[in-house]
Amino acid sequence: MTRILVIGAAGNTGRPIAEGLTAEGFTVRTATRDMRPPVAAAAEHVRFDWADPSTHGAALEGVDRMYILAPALVEDPSSLMTPVLERALSGGVRRVVLLSASVVPEGGPGLGQVHHFLRTQAPEWSVLQPSWFMQNFFLPGHHHADSLQRDGTLVTATGQGRVGFVAAEDIAAVGVRALADERSHDAAHVITGPQALSYDDLAAILSRVTGRPIRHVHATPEEAQRHLQASGMPEVYARFLTMLDTLIRDGAEDRVTDTVLRVTGRAPRDFESFARARR
Image (cartoon, rainbow, N blue to C red; front, side, top):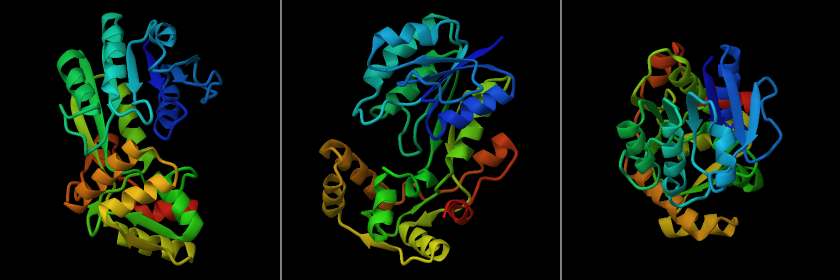
């Protein structure tokens, strides 16, 4: 029986992936930094930490396929992830599905290196490259959600740049198929929602949905970075997010793909419907 390891199974994509695979009859081993299982129906649960080799053996034992995502707030996750993946492949794992991002090219720094490793070394592989998550505007603890709750603003250096915002559930649906389908996808899936929206567009939609005045504050990169650091974000990560803002401003995320419909057979959620379900 196929055993699938889901790392980050308490997260926005890991939890629905674990639940979806369990519903399809796979043996699912969830892995988080907490000993408490996040998905009650999963067959097995282990503690896992990329930075703690003592947790790796139990997680990988008897695994055929695995879903992986980067450790949080690590500048170069490839330094932690690649040795674990080498161990996994040598131990019999055949298929690996990686959560990356649409803005990270294969071979680029960090996750781009993990992407390249999987494409060239794994017998079966897929890389999920989603655009920005719709959940970012609703989850307490995310800087956008906190800013909206605090004073009704979105502060970015994105200018008029547009993004194909996508729901985590739609990313997870693609991930389930990449792990569950008999034939490996062996592909990089760029995943977006059905519309490319600017942050001005988002502010207008959120104003309409919530009945609150929401505005997008057009900041310079320097102002945006100071805003992030003032919220308690480490300087290196604030600088990285501000750099991503400038890529959005310059058009890097202004696209819409048919990946969700093509892979799952259903259309992705639009932002206004998503917001109304969570208002």
